[in-house]
Image (cartoon, rainbow, N blue to C red; front, side, top):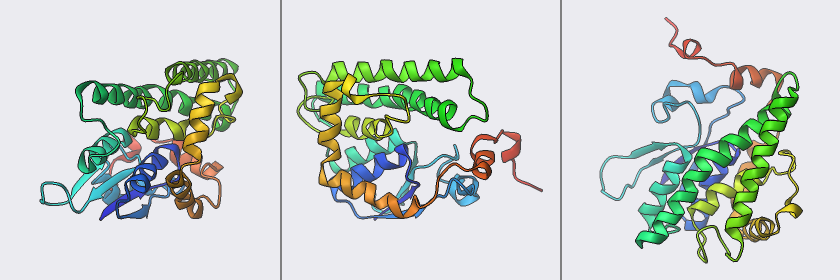
Length: 235
């Protein structure tokens, strides 16, 4: 059994995509980021960066004590190695999947996240910041579109953790100021993943938790106002 500490955000969806595809037994432990659950001591014990998702694997491959992991890219890699699924075992295939996994973790996710922040949540619209991140998101969509030309999935014919990492960050493309018609190969890939039964199940898992907006005026203070000092334990 795997405990998934989760909220229905793009990084959270990455992990439910894998778990549903692999058919692993798991239990969702909600981390309500609107209320600051990510700063609770029990969660920080497994996710010291106070960000979800995180997992606790109660049946690790070595048969030892439960294993906890934080960071969505690390979790995807761990689960792929645990199950032997969605990560090629040959040198070149594995290399390619890991390149694109890290491309998402270091590029698509952070840039799209800043796009969301300055376009949707910032208290004042800063035209330079909005334009900067909309354009950078557009550039990254172009990179992915070129990569998908002539390929069913990012690493080739096989669906992989690279696809699972990237897809949730493309789902809010309209909020990111993007038009998928401008990226025909990306759009084909996006539609194919959206139609996978496991994708449908994964997103259904998040619906009960998404009954109200994640970002409200109160949650902005929690989500965007933290510093190192504010996270110190109170005496």
